Every structure is written in structure tokens, then in C-alpha cells.
Length: 437
Image (cartoon, rainbow, N blue to C red; front, side, top):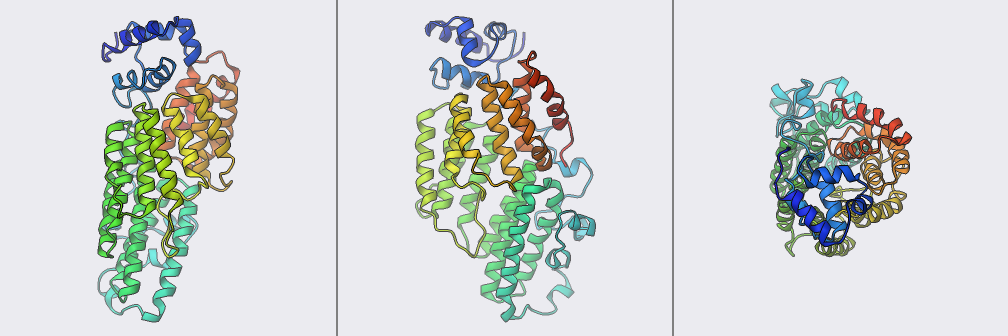
């Protein structure tokens, strides 16, 4: 008998009988077979958090069953062994917190050309005697900052089109170089360059998370906070809490997600940071199975994000390709709440607004959309969606997107007689077994 809290199976049976449902009726509701549910009730088969959430909704249990399953158990969440970063696994040197490659080297020409942009800022050393020999002329400071901002926008676009491991060395070097250039500029330009170096560091942290290395992601986020504080910006430290909350969310830890994101709710913070924090609090409540709390915080997030007035001189924090982020996240949360039909309906509509060039974003929300349809029993439609997105998912090569791909693969495995599932499963399995790049 598999190890799992012994109360889960009996509690599932108790709730099912209290609701007056037979095994067949519950099986029809959650799209599992009678034999699978019977084995879970008797403890001969282990329940996933996804199954528990579906049963919570079907039995109106308010998250009680999901609370009995350890976070991430058999649910596609990364284990510590899975999180050895992709760059280190393939033997490529990892940039340190200051943005330097081991030994103080700059990225190779091959690495720079791999992302399609050879940057003078990224290739030139910014430390030592040659870097400090002369200051950047004051009248060129505005042009330098503008060019650096334009380049950041291009790297963000490349982040939608390339594997994170390809981009990481170059954007890490950009953060280092901008920090070095800031030391040679007058006050106004220096502040702008430090703030931009912080944004590069934060972006590097996100790409590290996408590459499967949460430790490096946290290190880069902390480095971004230090750079921002040097520039006089104290708000990024609170934004860093929302980044940590998102990492906890992907680990399946509802309590930690809520606790961390709640720390960025101070009224003194810009509306965008508070809005992103409220969004993650809502996502944490979705993991915990609290429907009302989830929607309450998402409504608050919508209000705060609508009130945001972004600084045109700095890149926008958070997602940039969602025209209506809270509607998309609402659909995302419906799946965590065990409401796949609602999730599919919302995600279908929201997905149509995504730009065609945002491959990473389309793969992220598209795979969750496919999973929602699969959990609703619409296997053929789910396979059509996932099949169309598989090239984009392989291009994005994202550790976080793979979580939903694994969940989809396990869902399709329950429908062995489906021709659509049989056709897609080998390609999906192959994509999941390709090492992160």
C-alpha cells in the first residue's frame, strides 16, 4: 500500500457517501475511472493534489481533501533534484550575482550571436583600469540610457522566442556592465543606469527560474534589490516578495505564497506592485481551495493594476503581453480550484488576445488551457490545443511550463483508448524528456 496520509481515502469515501454519490457518479464528475477512485479510497493508489481539488469541488468540501495531500505530491512540481539548474547540468559556467561569468570573463561571441544581438555594453569590460580611465560625458548620458532601455525591450522579446539558457549569460552580463557604467556617470544618469541594471538582474532571475534553477533565481532577485536600493529605489524589495511568492506557488506551497505576497501590500507601494502581490495572494488561495478569498484578492488586483501609471523611463514590472492579466489569471486559478470547465471557458476567451509573437506566453497559458479541457473530459480538443502549441513550448523550453505539460501527460494517460491522446502522448513525452537548455 502506498504511503500517504491514511485519512485521505477514508475521508474521500465519507464525503462521497455524505453527498449521496456512488463511485460511478463521482467518477463521471471528475473524469476518473471507478476503479481508480476505489483504489484511492482503499489506499492502494496515491491521490494527486489535482485529483483532490476536483473532488473538493464535486463534493463541496472547501479544500479539505487537497489539504490532506502533501504539496506537489505526484503533481508535476519540481523536486530538489529536478532544480539543479539547466546551465549547470550541461556544464556551462553560471554567472555570479554581480553579473560576471566565472573568472571575470564576458560572454563569448557565440553566446551573444545566439540571441541575435551583439551589444557593445555587454561585450566590453566594465571594471579595472580601462573601465575607470574616463567618465562617460554628461551630454551622452540620456542617449546611453535610452539605448539601454531599447536594448532591454529587445531582450525581453528574445526571451519570448529563445530557451532561457541561451539568453541568461548575455542579460547577466548586461546587468554587470550597466552597473559598471553607472559608476562613471553623473548622478542623474547613474541613477537611471542602476535602476535599469536592477531590471536586468530581475529579468535574469526570471530566466533562471524558467531554466529550472530557483536558487539562482532568488540570488538574482536579491541582487536586483541591492542595485535598486543603491539607486534610491526601496520599492523593488517589496516586488521581490512577489517573485518569491510566485516561486512558492510553483512549488505548490499555498501558505508560503499567501504569506510572502501579503508582505507587499503596504499602501505606500506603487499600485502595480500591490496589484501583482494581490494577484499572487489570490493564486495562493486558489491552491488552498478557497474560492471566495481567491476571487476577492483577484478583484483587488484588477482595481490596483487599473490604477497603475507606469514610468515610461523604466521597463514595466511583471508580465507585458497580457492585455487583461486578471481575467487570464482568473481562468488559471479556476483550474487550481478544481473547476476545469470554468477555467477552460475563461482561458479560451483570454487566450485569443495574446500576440502571435509571444511564444513563451502563448505556451504558458495555452498548455494550462489544454489541461483545463483535458480535466473537463474534452480529450480530443485538449490534444488539438496542445499539439498546436508543442513547438512553441519546446522553443520556450520552460521549467514552469513543463509543470502543466507533465500534468497533461498524466491526464492523457487515463484515456488510453482515445486516438487523439495516443497520437499526442509520444510527442509530449519526448518534449518532457528533453533536457532543459
